[in-house]
Every structure is written in C-alpha cells, then in structure tokens.
Image (cartoon, rainbow, N blue to C red):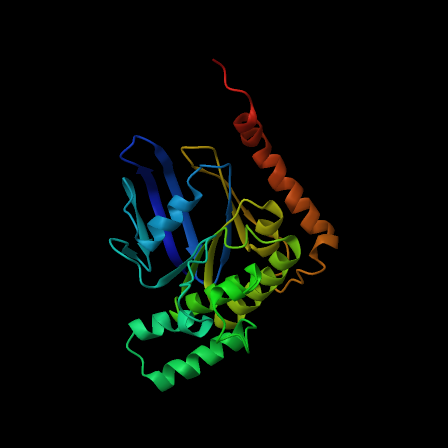
Length: 260
C-alpha cells in the first residue's frame, strides 16, 4: 500500500474571510475507501475540491502520487449530490460525453457505453432521457458517466444524500462492489454516520469550522462486508455509536441558540 493522496498541513481561507479548514494532515492509501464526516460547514467538500484541483490551498499542499496538485487533477473523477445529467441527451449520450471528449471512435464509444450500462444495471435504458428516470436510476447513469472517464480515484460528495433509504442501500452495495472489482480509491464525504461506517475502510472525523481532523477511525469490519445484513452486526452498531459520541459535542454546539 502507498499513499495516493497526501495533505501536508493544508489550510484554506476564502476571499470572504472564512477559514474553511486548517492544519489538515492526512494520507489516503491506494485502494482505500475513505469516508469523511463532520458538522455542517466544516470543510468536508473543500478538501475534495482541493484534491480535484478546483482551487488551491491557502497553506500547505495537496500531493497526488507525490506531486503537488496545481491544476485540474485529471486522475480523479467527481460525483456530487446533484447528478448534472444533460437533459437533452439520452442516458447513453450522457455516458458517452467523456469518451467523445477523449476522441474515441463511434464504434468504440458504443461498445464502452453498453459495457457501462451493464456495469451499473441500466441495460435497456440507454435510449431514455434523464426526465424519464427515477432518482436512483439517474444516480446510476451519473456513476456510469463518472466511470467512463476511468479515473483512478473517485471523489464523492454526498452522492446518495437525496435518495430514500432502500435506494441508498442498493447504490451503496453497487458502489462498494464496483470499487472492489475495478480497484478504485474512493474519497467519500457524507453527513450520514451509518453510511460512513458501512462503506469506509477508514472514517475521517472533522471538527467544526475551521475544520481540522479530530480523529481517523480504522474500521474493524471486514473489507468484504455484506451491507444488506450489516445493521445486525454488533461491531457495526458499536462503530456507529463511537462516531456519534465523537461528533455529539460539536453537533450540540451547532444547534444551541446563539447568544445575543
């Protein structure tokens, strides 16, 4: 195992004076599935944006495979809570976008799109438009488009947050399976503690803003875990409880009435 992403004393202050994160030191190992939790506004998305190269840190540096991230990091793929599917394109057309940008031939694109449709369970829906899909199917289409870039690291910012519990579980299972089979590294931000424990090999816990890393918890759960029955595992319940205990003071402070 070797570190693919390294944060070295990273801080980020925005032009409006908000200090989003400060003193971030973290190494993400190749092949890891890292989840990130913390109070609202603590800079979780900020660290994904810096990893993607969307903006630079104000202090320290972010390294990717040993090199500073100074521009758009094309080795990463980014999936947010909003799927950003192009409404005028079919599902197949949306998935094809990265392949077209890469200059692939029409025949090669068609074959790759069919492979990706099968990979995410959307066979038969390639000719459908985004408005004709359920929320879960739209997420699958967005995931297939993300995989079409073939990034070695997936940056995921609460991608399943808007889904109902059953569909969220279905997509969690599918994502975990795909990442194992494709050998992807995953950096996954979530507000859902149960999701963080269910998916993560490690969970990074942030403090309130300016966000710093309060604790990194290595999961005691097996890497090959059955998410469908995980909630009945006492070790899973204990890890969820541990996270709640760590986060409770910050969440309580955030919800307390502000003094005049």
